[in-house]
Image 1 (cartoon, rainbow, N blue to C red):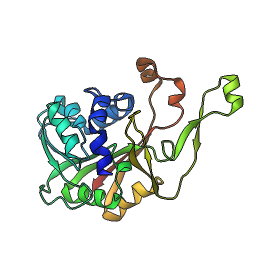
Image 2 (tube, helix red, strand yellow):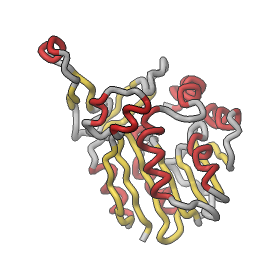
Image 3 (tube, rainbow, N blue to C red):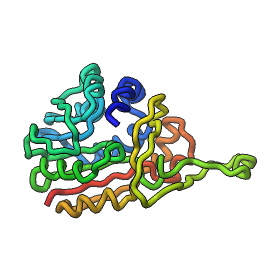
Length: 246
């Protein structure tokens, strides 16, 4: 899995660019910024920070302290090349992060949970590093409506009548993995498929309080602005979970 990301790092960084892909721009970023509110003076830990996208998104939000962690040094090199602000560390986000303090106000896992094998380790790190009443954001590709669980599909009838494709769910329930190309990359990476409960129950078991569960799809306004097909509004593309440490 690490070798996959080492090979894909530069192309992934190029695809995201400075502004991000359509889902980030239209759906994920507005959710994060609206829930975080004013960030000034708070400490944010970004688990699975990749090429530093989130640090650059938040730079205009105020006087905050950002720390990013990722297991792929090549992605962190891309973050540096883009002048991403904050402190960055190379480490496995599913294993104890003894190098970090335990007083973060917010922990983010932004579009990363479907890329890790050990969800329990990711959640444990979030819990351990948060202050009391701190928030953990787990934002990921929707487990029921995204690859590899589901894909867009048309029957011959729909093709002939030129109807919109629908989402066909090929697998939902068992936990597994598949190598898949994200964002149209040439290099595939390992994607894990799990049911929604597999992302909720570990947080509850640790003692988190689930304060929000949102299933996000691009708005009609965003579809028009970024010139995407209207059927993208029909199904949620992103699952957003917000936990509070009790």
